[in-house]
Image 1: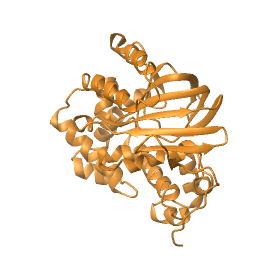
Image 2: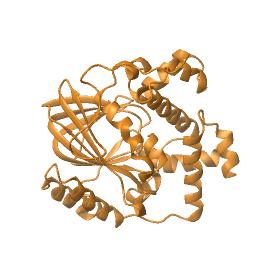
Image 3: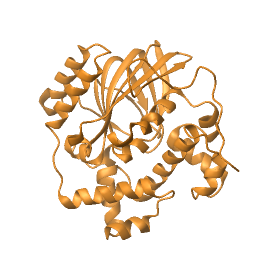
Length: 314
């Protein structure tokens, strides 16, 4: 079975918009949904992925985000809540530190909304939070009053800016985050590099390969990946295999049946369950009717070398 380009509903395709490079819009039924990516400065690329400015014009909007790395999000306008993959619902605080998600997460926005978010890599997570990432997997923290109110003050300044002031917003955020980053020990950087390479380098990552690359036991690896990534290696391998396959289906138009055979899934039913769990859509939906948010977040891949490979994939 060869690759093919999947058709998508007319008017539902993510297209570049007028706000500049790395800015996209989807003409969704509820009104336009927009996402503008802004890469980090070079000295912060080991800590953070991109900044993104998300906006919707509808009075109410609901969608789902795929399993992802942690996020720091500022609610510039609007309100809402998350529903995690285990069914728990949590109201979104004004400044939200969202832990790593291990399944698709539904969200609802009330009123026209604008959200400024930052993807956190493991070193950024440790700098901002310090807790084991697994403690907050599929959960969030109200970060509004964190750091003696520094993030609340940043929110006030961001809210005073206009939607078109993306560069000024990014400069403010990167300046503030640059003050809180903490260098890791050499051994920690080496571990993160090895885990990242393992997650993005193998079609179906094998724990034995990671153990060989790091010289660590599976017990040691589980403890360390829980701390930095929010889950043990086996779950991380499943997550990133699904993320990789979803991009190839939705962006590259590849046959999901062929991917099922190539990526080490037991059968098509197993493939469908895994994609649905981690992405929130079936392979067929990714091919024919991907949601606005699914398309826009997959386009993170277009950031190229300006962000870490792990963030482009996740």
